[in-house]
Length: 291
Image (cartoon, rainbow, N blue to C red; front, side, top):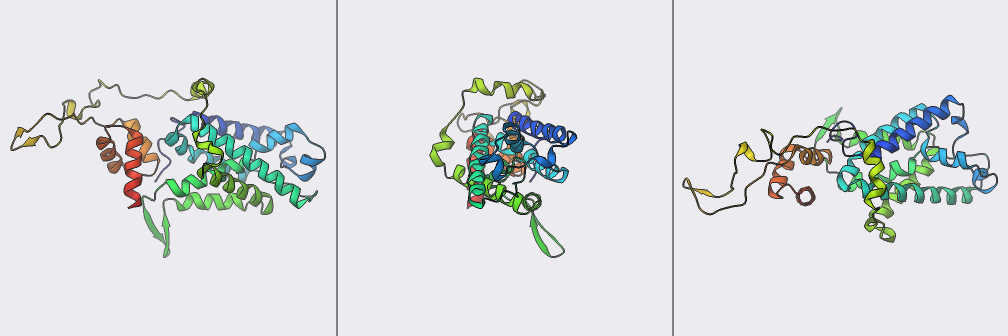
């Protein structure tokens, strides 16, 4: 399994979030404010500072945390490709807001004025581990020194490194993110049915890099061998009945399914059967994985 096509192809919202997080982390680090980040009991209930509150949502407080955090955010762009930018934006807002509320409740319960939580989008990152665990299939298994691993193991290891990077300071935000991701998956408050007007997301689409895609009339277009192919119509060398032509799946659709963890041959076969409908093909592949 891999993260799909390189770059932020078909993931403009993730691209914006990753660049915003990285930019703020570097900027606040250069200003010497990184050590002051991270919500504390005093920040919430005594001396509220808006800049620190907002910065703590996006900015990591150390370089190692930034490296692992941005890597995971970049990898999880696969979910935006899977559900679309509109629903992924809802997922981001729900995860960030709900995990933040849970962190505030945790601070109110602990009432420790000397400790502060780790800074950064921990809620979003660990909320994304829920669909990663349930919806991304394992595509390969291997052994290292007698220990069984899968292609998903390294993502889990990166998550564990980030979760325990600052012990209690990072553990609480991580657990809050996992809980937020669980509630999203359970469709709490009907959140998975909510959509933004597409016009509100147009700004993110303008931030995506232009990508080249083959024209339907290109030499290797969407028709197999530049001719119509009809399954099951050739019997004894003669056509038995007219059939709907089998269209070759677009490379973009194949890449999207591969980015979800499916192997290329299965993705192509599913798209052929689904007549290049990526949602139908995804359901077919997920059903075959669960058997």
